[in-house]
Length: 278
Length: 312
Ligand SMILES: Cc1ncc(C[n+]2csc(CCOP(=O)(O)OP(=O)(O)O)c2C)c(N)n1
Image 1 (tube, rainbow over the protein chains, first blue to last red):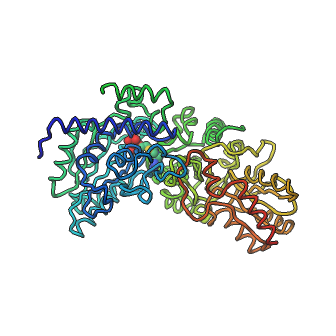
Image 2: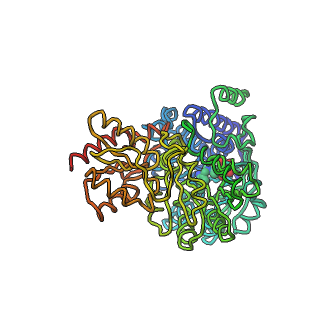
Image 3: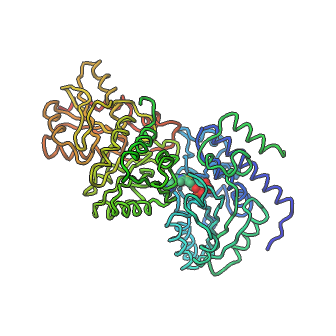
């Protein structure tokens, strides 16, 4: 396993902080979007887009590129922010998000946004589609890896587990699912809406390799992604324990911030907290 | 209830009706804060079931509750009830004829900000094609609230199509509502506009614009797209000789399709269909500009009426 110098960790943490700031600004500007699940996923998306995924923004259709499917499509803001930072889309588009003429849709649209591998927004599709992409890689002898990011509430949908059975049957070790386990969904805490625990055990029983980490700890994320790549007989799920609304005190662990945009004053307070350390 | 979003009027009415009818139970799929079935949940927590993000499962649980003699109102996004849970709806609700009510929230383009994944522009066509299903599309907040007891007390499957947003007010409580019976919202002898849902208000505005040019348009509200009030439509065809349909839905298979089928068998006259052309819409900053951009503007209805007239 690679050893990661502190400088890289710090750089990626800074990327995560920028994704949070840009996401909230985008959501505020169009007065729509999903702050809670954007903030909880910032480190995971930063680790993938600024370190782990093999991508070439000049060739968004490079056959050997790694594939990332945002199964929890409502976290589109940090995805768009990452795609802009990597040069897949012009940064000017971020501030037009939500306008009728803007190609960026409320949820990711693969036909309108370079770098978006798959259209999403209706929850539940990532694992099964990821399994198909992983099978395709195997058939073609390509070496790309497939990653999909889910919400924990999303895992209440049966289709997730149907996909999990398929990935296990074909021992798709080139598929990694990451679950942003922030414990809160739209209507409230996951354990109240529909309990999922023991969650990691469920995946184990489905014959997946399971890695449980702190999803805000950059080193743990990178090491888990490396470990997943070294498991050759089954798909891996990274159960990333996170905090919904992470980084903005009044949004943390609060379902009310699932799909509501901050107003001017709230944005200012949020940015103050996020920029405080800089 | 002018200015009240349709979802709010519906949510409050459902909670109120829950007090009157202890057989009513309510289900949601982690969207009760969006659909506003939350109002019922707060008042009657023991009769509210949050099934999580599992819409097909929610429909089957409702089927079980209906088999036990309850009257389940299943709340979810229209796009999910009509698409993801469709097989459950077809087999276990319609074919088995269980007394399940589908309260389909955020229908049409009303979830403008979430984009085409969340729009429901094919749901009327889908639901209308299912045997045993009754399809009701309220025109405004007042009407959405008024349907709650009628839907609950009707024995059989119902798809109640609800908008997220504020619709132009057209209904008042003194106007009676009956399943399957259209409403003449404005008299007129030159051309007829047959509208459903949020397009009823827009069609009345179009009729005013037409009147200022000396064209008297009759406006029919067809809230029940199935079973269709064929007699009212045939009569309008006979008396005005040209029709326009208007709906917040694709032009394929919805109200326009239903009216075309009815006219073909009774009194074929020129027909223009106002609706979303055969394409997915886009994300937008508000519902009105999105509807305008998708061919649902008042001026689109006016133009269609003139076309229909010219073809007489
Ligand atoms: C199948 C489906 N049902 C409902 C929704 C509406 N919805 C969007 S996000 C969400 C909650 C998601 O919770 P979770 O998966 O835990 O995501 P996170 O907390 O990371 O935002 C819901 C119910 C949807 N997009 N898709």
